[in-house]
Length: 286
Image 1 (cartoon, rainbow, N blue to C red):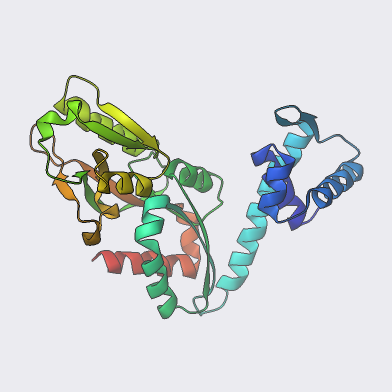
Image 2: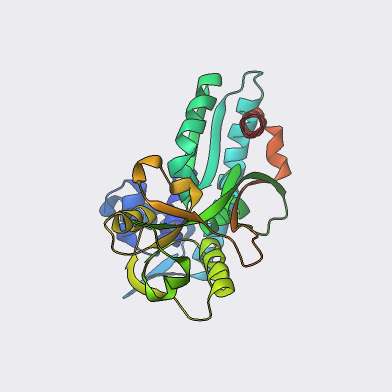
């Protein structure tokens, strides 16, 4: 087995679907099937079975997947250690970043850091914060930037605090919200929970959800066209939106705040590229 085999097994295990795994690996399905057959022949065991709803790994296959994850972690660590032997800040910085932060903040941060450290390359995974936590737990990234307060046993730094805002095309009376159409968008559990906490603090009846969309930006466009109101974090608001905004507070006047955290395991501080990026973020915050 080599690095490519490890990645193939892990990807297939995550997708449980040959077509989706091949797409992620930028391989043709016949090429993926051929590689998997060679692996099964090499070990002389069946690694998985095809089912109507996907694939099911055998116990031998699951064992090999765990081995592949461990070997990939060790291989990446070895590459990091070799690159770290140089006094120059260089190598690959692996980041897991929540979608909103990645869209609105990360590009400018990476550009400024890259200007300062041109020998650094970036490997960035974006998604909801729960996905970033999973990457952290499995050492898939050096650093995680997450929105919302998640339990983490390693190092944890507060990067930013921001308000939640009510948005609508025109000014509305917040007391009328239960009767007005709300536009709901898919987001991570921490933001859902925060919005629900604020709503329950303000009202005894549920919101009138008139529309459900898959993305926050789609939601904003619906609001811009006067189809309803929504609640969004400050990070996604731009002056060009030309929306009515109202900063949210609880009944005791405490502002509704969403935190952004930097999380990592202390072991990654051995890497100069990681230390440089953490220092850079702290200087930016200051």
